[in-house]
Image 1: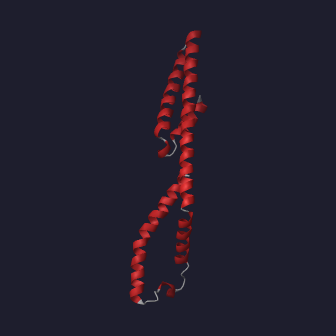
Image 2: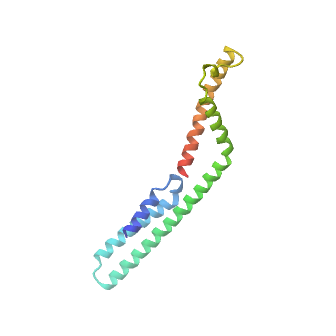
Image 3: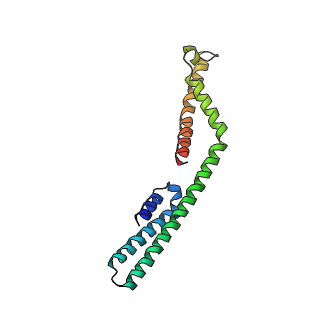
Length: 148
C-alpha cells in the first residue's frame, strides 16, 4: 500500500499541464485506498475481510490507472516540447551566436559604430529595446527545457 501511495504522490507532483485528469484520479484513488485500509483494519469476519480486500484491490487498480494516465500525459507533453525545441533549434543557435559575439567585444572600439556617435547611439537604443525580448525568449526556452 505504501508503494501505491508513493506512486500516487509522484503523480500529484507532475507538471501543472499534466495534472488535469490524472491528479483528480490520483486523489480519488488515494482516498479510496485510505478508506479501504481503514475497513480492512476494522474487519472482523471473513466476509468483511474479503470485502475490504476487494475494495483495496479496486483502489490499487484506480491508482494504477491514474498513474498510467499521468505518465501518458507527461510523455505527450515531453514529445510536444521536444518537437517545439527541435523546430526552433536554428533560432536558438542564431540567438546563442549573437550573444557570444556581443560577449567577445573586449576592445573599446568594438562598441563603436562605423557611422560615428549617432550610429553608436542608435545601435545602443536598438540593443536596449531588444534585450528584454531576448531575455523573455531565453526565459521561455529555459522553462521549456526544465519541463522536458
